[in-house]
Image (cartoon, rainbow, N blue to C red):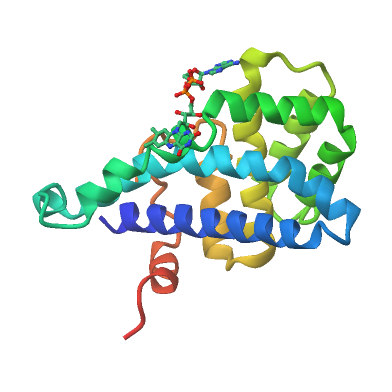
Length: 209
Ligand SMILES: Cc1cc2nc3c(=O)[nH]c(=O)nc-3n(C[C@H](O)[C@H](O)[C@H](O)COP(=O)(O)OP(=O)(O)OC[C@H]3O[C@@H](n4cnc5c(N)ncnc54)[C@H](O)[C@@H]3O)c2cc1C
C-alpha cells in the first residue's frame, strides 16, 4: 500500500506542478511573447494529459479506501463519476491532440519555446535526457494525426519531469522519471521499483501532525 500511495503522491505533485506552470505562463502571456508561445502549446498538452490521468487516479484512490470507497455515502463515487467528464465536455482528447499538432504546424515558435523549457534541467536526470533526445528526434519528421496522442503524452510527461527535476525533492523527481520515463513503464499505480524512496515521498505528501 505504501508503494501505491507514494505513486499516487508523485502523480499528484506532477499534475500540480504542471497546472501551476501553465497558469503562470498564461498570466505572463500578456507582456511576454515567449510565455504566450509556451502557453499556446502547453495549455492543450496539460489539459489532455491531466484529464486522461485523473480517471485511473481516482479509481486507485477509491480502491485504497476498500469497499467504503465505493458506497454512495462517501465522496469517492461522486468524484469517480465526475472524473471522465472534463475530457468530454471541455474538448475531447482527440480534438485537443489535433489542436496541438495544428499549433506546432502553424506556429513552430511555440514548440521551440516548449522545448527550451524542457531542456532547462538537462543533465539533471538520465531518463529525462534520453526522453528529450527521443522527442527531438521524433519532432524532426512530419507528424501523422494517428500519432497525435502519443506525441502529446510524451511532451506532457517530459514537461512534468522537467518541472519536478527543477523544483521537487530528488525523491519525487527520481521516482517520476524512473517510473514514467523508463523504457517499459508499469501500467498500474503502485507497480514501482522497490528502491524508490517511498518514505520520503509519503513524508512530503501526507499531512504533518
Ligand atoms: C454534462 C454535459 C454538459 C454540457 N454542457 C454544455 C453547455 O453548457 N454548452 C455547450 O455548448 N455544450 C455543452 N455540452 C456539450 C459538450 O461541449 C460536447 O459534448 C463536447 O464538445 C463533445 O462534442 P460531442 O458530444 O458532439 O462529441 P463528438 O465531437 O462527436 O466526439 C465524439 C468522439 O469523437 C472524437 N472526435 C471528434 N472529432 C474528431 C476528429 N476530427 N478526429 C478524431 N476524433 C474526433 C472525440 O474525441 C470523441 O472521442 C455538455 C456536455 C455534457 C456531457
